[in-house]
Length: 257
Ligand code: HPA
Image (cartoon, rainbow, N blue to C red; front, side, top):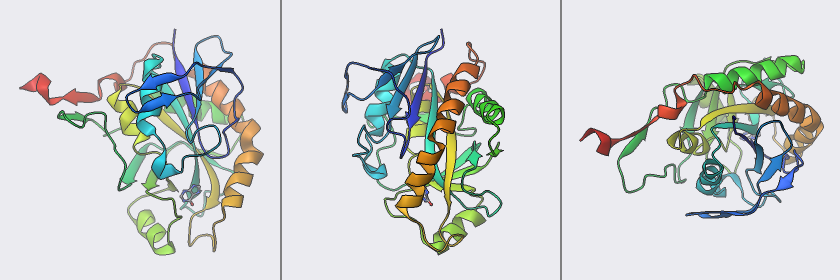
């Protein structure tokens, strides 16, 4: 049976109710905030920043989170993030299912392979099957959804300057957030399919004259019921068997020498 995990972002700490899973120990610390959701298949929920949003984006224990999800034998991840829109045509309240990404983080450990040469293919970083499930679930829920786009990930925790956003737009960015990296490559190192449901909470710096944390959280809170419905539907729509190539993204150099 398929096994799916949902990773919730800012404002979604209590997105899904379920039974608390016993703590999972990992080489990076215990993960004690995973819930098992009632579904006809094993479905787990993990709030990315911890239950009280204690960890800011640059300090999230990404490796512990992904390690714990892999330990649960999960092979598909749906990740939810609040993002700013860099496209004036994509307003707050819309959803974007990105098809590619650019990493501008600077000081996060982005691999499980610190002492071994191993590389993940990131040409098509998101799983096409999980993306399709998300796009269809958004359409069924009749929300405004964009079925592609480029997620630019910044280091944070500060918001961007207007000039940075102009630059990110020029190089092809659609939305900007702080949490996709290294979560996505770590999932690929574990052979887990990953796609992102981006919730546009605000226009990015310079498109909007000011960004407030309040607007980000208020927007997320307002959309919580819709997000919940999209996620549960998307998890159901993910095919039982994988026909993607995500499971083979990791290549260890030792296998070739
Ligand atoms: N920038 C970076 N991260 C974000 C934003 C933003 O404008 N909105 C929500 N998360």
